[in-house]
Image (cartoon, rainbow, N blue to C red; front, side, top):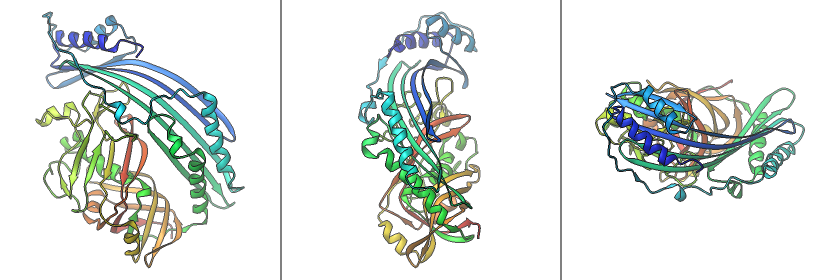
Length: 462
């Protein structure tokens, strides 16, 4: 790293203790980013940036005071700490053992080098654009976006912990608008991982563009969706948007501890079908929401939230762990940047695979709807009610997938749906995204096997 974050961190941690902090930490960040877009057959908005700074947290009597600066000098750090201090200063010397923890990122990142020439990045954009437009005159608009970033962090706290982490990420997506002269339909396909440009060894820009274009064209031919109560099969291809929104946020400890979650106070209770196990794991190789440590220096790992239908626990950052009395953060303290205070957040959240062949689930469904791709949605974490759009869906008739349908939305209640799921496939698929909460966005992935909901309200246009 360019700056000696560790030396500045040790200085800052000592200053925090001198100024009377019960606990404090310094989150140093250096972020190198690139973004580019191809739209209307033009490559534009090429942008490279570097951002460096430190966020400083001062905790006294369970109250948190937070400040940040992009001036990485002892004097500027000392000034921020002095402004944060709520108690009288103590000039007593503080002796701390700053023991460095072993870096963990090399075991989960799929490559670290993002420094390929800009010309090669532009070529990736052009290839996807050309492929999407090759589908004919019905393709009216194509937008291709490529982003990468290398985030280097160093966390030092008043308990004597020093942690470093490196997080390279690449994201690529194509958005296609198709029209037959009457209807407009869109197709969207994103890919991304924790790693470098080896992402495109597994999937090419052309494949991403093809999926988006084909989805838009399929939906042009789709008939209006029926409305009513139906059996719904959600394919693993859809990713875990529903589990992330309708369940995951309610298992974040700050919401649960404030009574703002339908899962508040239900540890040890049955909250889902015995077929359902929900896991959050921030230490999965290559997954978009992974990191070696969270943004408070806690090692990430597997947290079983719901096991065979029984609620086992919540996702904690340091503050919520202390408030709860267990003192055990789960590696879910995350922040958008050094300018933001850490809060409990998901990483890679998923329903664990079951034992049933997905083909059998469909064959065993006499009539229903198959969801292949989820769209956006809304959820009320207090009662679990949700509504989600479906961007690609099909009818299931006599155990077979038949016609595509459009204008589908799923309306229901997260806990109720979890209780009623009667089939879980032995497959699993993940989707990527940026999760928003309290004005912060962090990278996440969510996953799910093929599942069947026997009865759920479907909003349609027919």
